[in-house]
Picture 1 (cartoon, rainbow, N blue to C red):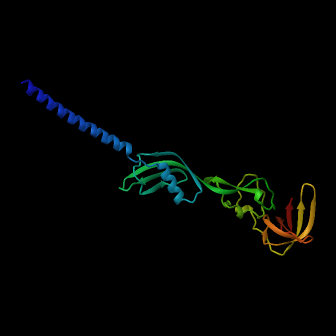
Picture 2: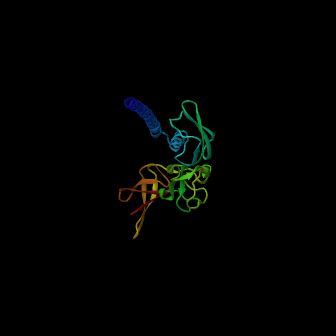
Length: 234
């Protein structure tokens, strides 16, 4: 009797142990799946998509909110309210499921700015302007976004320091052709020499120019400050 009783308890114990083993394996399986399920950074996906499909130099995304995590690469992004500003969009997954999201998107583009206050009639030189990223919602109409499109042109109106340079404030570049005679002004802290010279390359006002000193026959470089004067600094 005692042997039969012991055998039954051993069999019961084995069944309980088997069930506990199954439960433990089940818990480990679920835990492992949850731990290693890949999630994708919606901020990074959104930023990459906007950079690829919109013409802006830089963007910032904040206040991003979605109704679900993304566990796979999306098929496409659909905008209900496109950027910049408050943006509403949905992320469509490969199986057709859509995740709705909102974000605030700030976009920036390069703009040429004035580095100092200048008067009407001044010619823009390289030191007069600089490039900076500007909020696209605040860029004025006709703003210049390349330094070369501004340097050498004459201002048609006064410009304050640290303001965008726009088309309407510029006149076209004036080019001085190779072979034209000009005045050469050579300046240093101790002396000023004025002589005449010959332009050796096509140059525009405000840009660099090579000029041959007619007295010494030497070719020197300077800045074409107007259509008839090259300024050389030592």
